[in-house]
Image 1 (cartoon, rainbow, N blue to C red):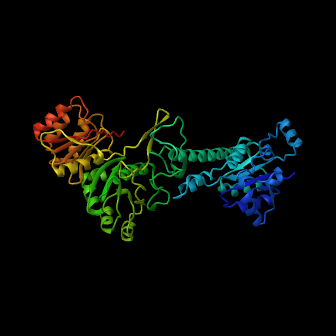
Image 2 (tube, helix red, strand yellow; image 1 turned 180 degrees about the vertical axis):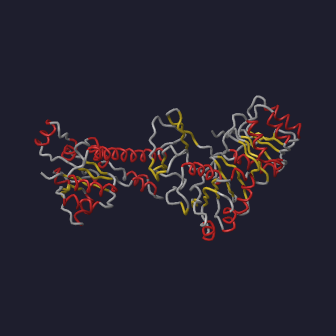
Image 3 (tube, rainbow, N blue to C red; image 1 turned 135 degrees about the vertical axis):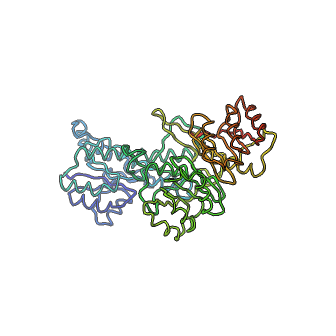
Length: 521
């Protein structure tokens, strides 16, 4: 008896050659609908699935393979005599291979303007059932869901006549991963389309991700790593195909890139952000990308060495010349002029990424990269809505005797915007739309103040200070006064707020309370 393969694929890449190869090896091909037509047109002898089942495809093709004569042939255990006797009694032929991939749900869901009903039509029913049944019965059924496997499978069959157990297990695992990711994509899409996710957290979640590329290693060379993106993409463009030049991206590059990208797109004016070890070390606005970079670099030249730089405007040739003078790991911008690319091309290892801004302004923030963020903790998963609140939406309250000047208020809002992206405890000093000192990641706030001031040096005089949380003691205000800082913004909420306010009044420092904390751990 010929071995039987069922072929039902949405993605027809390489399937004709694969089917011909199986036919040459003596396999019988059973197929459905559009796949059967494609194979017949290519010269493959095909048995229609309706000939096997004795029942036509119905409901416009919605029901084709969901039949005992199909799934009995797939699920029968060859080493269980009762199973094989039932097949014989019902005239069911065993199935030895299933080649299947699924309707393009993800591709359809990502198309602009497609209705939810049209997207729902792309939810495959028979395909996942074929794959799961075949994978469950992997010792006897070869299951292939990845077109990249076709050549390998044919080669093994030609050389050995059959597929070994280890390969069968790998293929079965791939099939279950494929259907799980498919279902997760559907759940992710409907979680956004049909409920107020993530504000209403469901009891169970399914998040579908696909591997974009493997990485040489993780945070350290002894750690393996890879980069994945959601199968239902977010407002942040994919990293795939974005690199113009340079070495391949590393784990740490991508981690730093996340901080730089999210920070720079908080600003509407031309901006530059320099990040080192996932923390902003220089942030500035400017009339051009060159000016923004120069001012950001001046904020902390030592930390900027080997950093990741992000822009929210096109990088031109003058900016590229400035970038070329500094050792940097990554430069990301929405675009680069040809002259800029040419200028930077001599730095062979420098990674250039062309990534546009997030795709949609929404109420409550300038941009909404994702509605939620994830963090592994204690073997579980912490999920929260993103901190998309901008200082411009907060109700700031002047609590000092001296109110901030208009210029001070602008710098305080700029500093607080940056503060959101600095690890807690976070302190940011800013002057004229540029950071002059940043301190963060310390277990106490006064140390962060001292670090920021030490980096600013004499530039601290007349600068404005933003803190991501309240001052539990007035010591931070005293440190600010010693450095001649002119204005402070913090959320307030401490039982000892008045002590800090009194200290600010003592030194003539303007102080505002924002009412909103911006911890980032």
